Image (cartoon, rainbow, N blue to C red; front, side):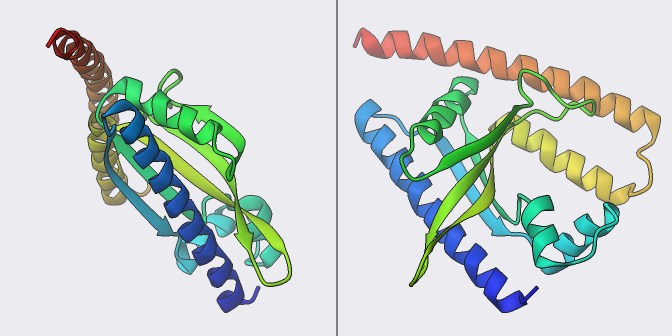
Length: 201
């Protein structure tokens, strides 16, 4: 695998994805008078992380293995205000003429065993090169502020306990995930109440 060529292709894909998401969100805000996004974070997975991911699967670091086994070399996380905003953003991406949705996983309706909640999409991003168009896979994660807070803490805990998270810590995180789920529901309903008041102004 030629590092420079591959990184360039992924960098181009990230720029395309960033621009497309920005346009979709701006158009939504103009149409609805409301921007659902709190913040967006994008990244290219480091070469070390790619190698580690392949190594865990018993695979060598080759162009083919990266292509077929690491769909999240390009990643973007969209953090929104309310639960309903997650699905509004999903709808925007589904209707994009420039992105092709390959797979989707709704960890909000079906959380992971750990309690993790988020909405994941793997999309194909067109990269326009001088003599061809290539489609590069990218992962989009969409979650609420509360979900992002939980995921951030979970990441730090897993870093501190790389082998196995203590049972009491794991149980506590699962319970907190349920608390956050209930909080998201309450904030969603509060937002609906606020919208009714605004509609009557």
